[in-house]
Image (cartoon, rainbow, N blue to C red):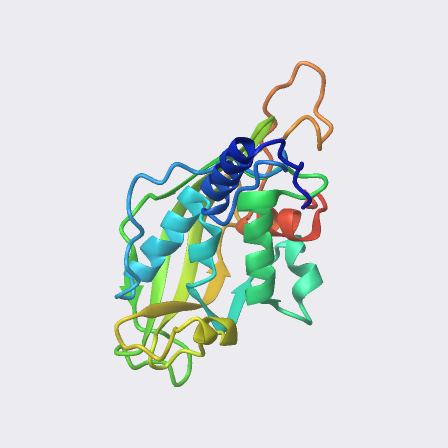
Length: 253
């Protein structure tokens, strides 16, 4: 971006200080109005030093729209599985949803938005029950030192300027200890390594497809809403929300 030429050394110093202040966060550009408001992070990020710790870090990233930290919790062979019967997953039956899809969606939803969908202004993600930690049922993954299967009951609210999205229901995570994980090459270049004290998310299975268990408040700018009706509850899964921000198209209801 070409900045205006300062008229004096003092104005240059002030402009440089402003750019440094806003640029240091890595996810806010004061010259781009579509970017999300800078999140006010009040609590430090949880450490992914246990099978549940990485899930609490996942939660923290959504709550704080923390894209940088979100890049650091998924293995290179990460995969997201859509809920059985979720039509939003039709595009990903042959070529599964991978880490690149996950990070693109997070960048759009947390930070920059898309041409049709603004970034979130606030996100709340609560676990309505204690996390359930079990043996990984997949073949060859039963060693609890390295693999765990975690169930979380989620209550997600994504707020945008003219509406909000809600997702409720169970999600399932397969997590892996760092000394068995396939670490993304770009993170290895940044100093990440096979570390037995760090856990990663290897697979996320969506279970938020049901009857009346979740809803969306349709934003007036992107969905047709009958006159006089403010909130129109319709089914919404995690998968549909993610496709909405990955593909820049409205999910099929």
